[in-house]
Length: 133
Image (cartoon, rainbow, N blue to C red; front, side, top):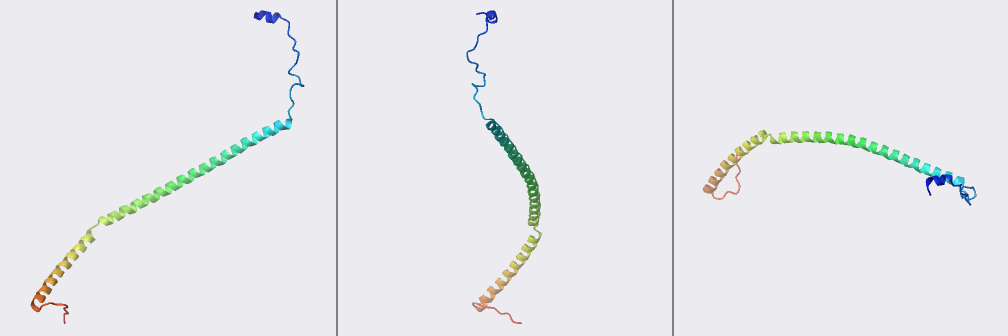
């Protein structure tokens, strides 16, 4: 059949009209509305949860920035304190004075030992030496 023959042909009469009220199954209106309300509540709940989580994330980010700044300041203070301690540790002036005093004391000890050896050679064994005034 050509397209023109469809236009010229008489209309077919359907035996059963499927668009009638009788063939469409009726559904309870309250069930449809309950499903719409449940869907809307689920969407609102999800949006509320999203807003709460976004607010928590923002507060955590601000707290992190604040703590990072504090820790960096503390780290800078510790670095300065370490630099001061290193400067004090590398200052050997007091150490040199102590070494000079130690060398002097060792020289005096050597002289005293020599004197004690001389006394022990002439007298014998010396167990104690008590100087008298």
